[in-house]
Length: 126
Image 1 (cartoon, rainbow, N blue to C red):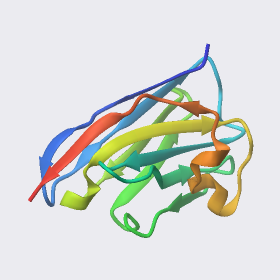
Image 2 (image 1 turned 135 degrees about the horizontal axis):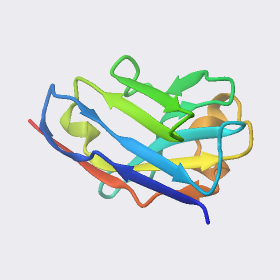
Image 3 (image 1 turned 180 degrees about the horizontal axis):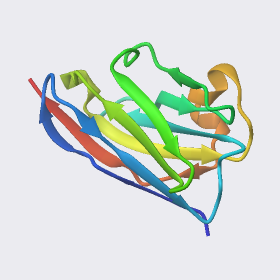
Image 4 (image 1 turned 90 degrees about the vertical axis):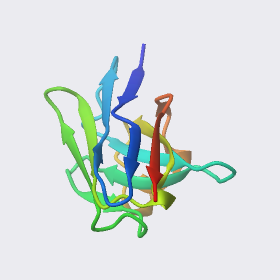
């Protein structure tokens, strides 16, 4: 059974940092792609950062330079280090994975992922 479990969410003041974790079990995404998405209240789910099979990364413009995504293959755990957080980063953050070796902008599109976690809430206060 495939499971993605996120943790590390919480409340932080603007300018602060958080590190989320996503542990994947029942599946290995090392040949495919894993990513973080977020959904703010009243808005659609959008891609934040993706980690590709060749270990390259891709970021949404809104988080470029502030977020860093990494994957620990031994632990099957995906991390985003989120720095210089802003109130507009407040959202429910989801981890997603696929065994398909996505390329380009597809890595940040939710349409190409079949495995999803339940999300962890991040709240940034001004």
